[in-house]
Image 1 (cartoon, rainbow, N blue to C red):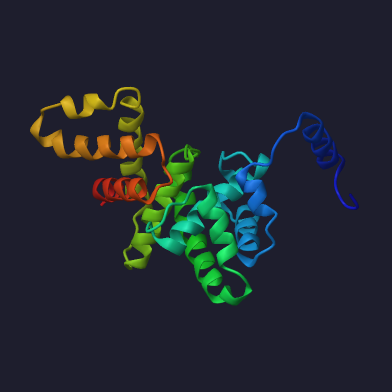
Image 2 (spheres, rainbow, N blue to C red):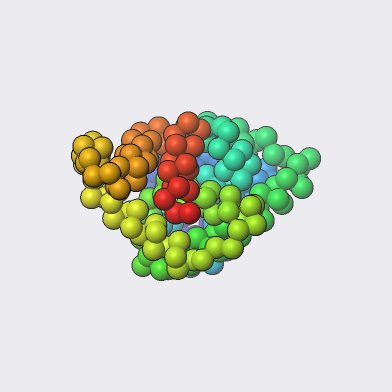
Length: 218
């Protein structure tokens, strides 16, 4: 090791001694490709991360950003689980610089709005799939040329989150409610929560959550 802080050396030493494996985000960070550098730079320099409560250790912020790059690249048509994200970083090499620049622009702009929403929500956006779902929705609205009322959108997301957390243990209670004017909202929220619980990175579950969130936040 020729250049590192004492903390980095100590961390490396302890992990080697304890046999701690690299996580997927750390493994991706070791791939020296243009997209990896764009992801790392975004996680290190975007104003969104100045105040957010997403933890820094073990490239967690890079992991969140990488998922948004995948949404910009594939727009929900592919799974974005760890093997898929690694393949994406490898796919967009030096010959794909224009595409990497396009993805970077989209993610940067989406994070600007997401940061304003996060501030309005007292920085409660810390769950990865919520970060991804809202970020992708923002990218879709921006692509469609829609003006985004940040305060209004934040209020709708807050209401959505209150209900999601209220029924997180027993989402089936949502569809047991027969009140007519709540039925459609409850069904969408139920579908969102089931797609949120497991296999959140499959394109099928990403699409289910996207449809639900767009409908409730329009």
